[in-house]
Image (cartoon, rainbow over all chains, first blue to last red):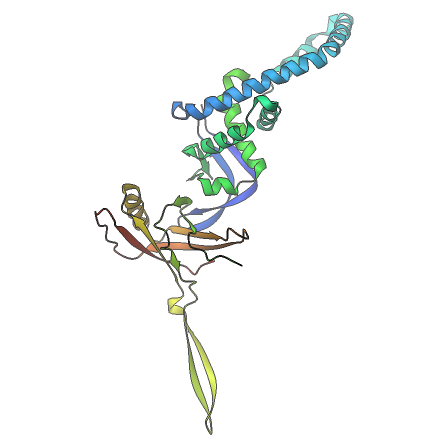
Length: 171
Length: 132
């Protein structure tokens, strides 16, 4: 697995060689078994949220989907001879990866099955465990993590999850 | 009512540091100033104010307990010469107001003495650019 870079929407100040510099991006190293006590909590939260979300969606959209499918089938029959482009579109949609912010939204929508405070604190511990490097050179420590905007924090945590923690599930 | 700050948070090179309570001291780094009298006759004087900019440096003093982590940290800061940066933040718990001073290009200037004893600590003296 490769390192991932996340651009900060709100740059933060960090100390480097006795000077204060502005950081505009962070790099993220892949998580390992060293972090499994943290990553497993996040992975479980995502799975619970995703399951909950799909249950909700199933109930609400079952009817809608049935109607859509029927319409699709009729359309497909009509376009039977020129089917090349359409199947490519569908394939591209399937290959689209979930974005870090979408993943975080999924977790937030987990409702009361998810202890969101625990998730966020676990995420904070993971971010400051040495896998996130400010400008690729300085470890993201607690004081630096506290300086991150909430949006950037969620983007970094979401990126870690998408790329390293639930990557296999998303595939 | 406001409360005196007695336990500020000290961050050195982005890392929060555990220190012996009540041991943080700093100078703003404005340097020394001198005022001399200039005679204008008949017992009257005017002031000549001068600044000694040669001493426009801040000093930060902290004491650490003699545990292995602190001893190793002190050694690392000394080895970094003047490439350390220190942030001291004190918060008034009553009002939430805070005071922050940042010291850039800080160097450990003293040859600190580590004593292996049960009730011992060692003092580090940093010199840096004036506090911001």
